[in-house]
Length: 271
Image (cartoon, rainbow, N blue to C red; front, side, top):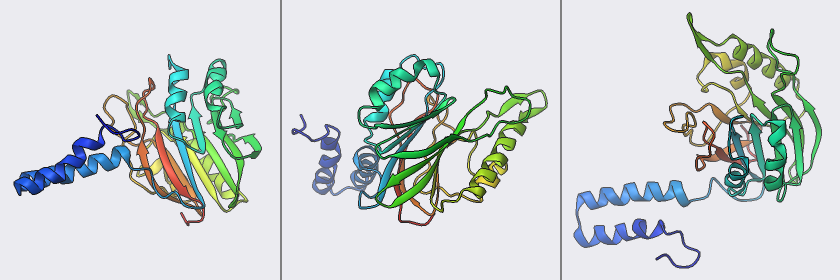
């Protein structure tokens, strides 16, 4: 049994170095290295926690999610300063608010995206990324100005259109059009420091996202986030400009088809 306040998972990992020393064997040494990696991923906090650091969580919660309350609790347990959601249905908003609002009194919601914050938010407004041909009520992006001890930061929460497989192959035109509109909004952003949280429905080496990735960068490890049951790609991102992502990880699975992504950001760094 673990001591009070110590994760039970610590004990097997901490026992491995002792075993390796006793046996003085190469296999045991390999086991020590692997155990240390696993322990670090599971129990070491994301990035630095010094002055100017900000913890964020990004999650496409899935509009068919049967347990918004449980999902919100999983996200809240990460202790983040900012929590961004996509596929947030208006009728499920009270369930998310009941959990996230307790420690995140500042909220911004536009269409099906939302942001909860420990710090004040101003200049909350929708960002028009609607591709041609979609319904007029399609709203999947917002802007807010975040106020911390380091000053103002522009925060974007974004959900770009899905990539669809059809008779002619993958159809990326709507996603790519939205990416270009997002790039134009970023280029016009007057604040130098930007944090973007979102499901971009593409990896960072996707050429369709180049207008965005030419302006913003992503640091930390890039764990795979989709699909939840057998992750194959990182399509959920934390991107920055004039800030630096110092670490990232995925969180425990929720009923969504995406894994949540947590990251630590140094607001004093250059990204």
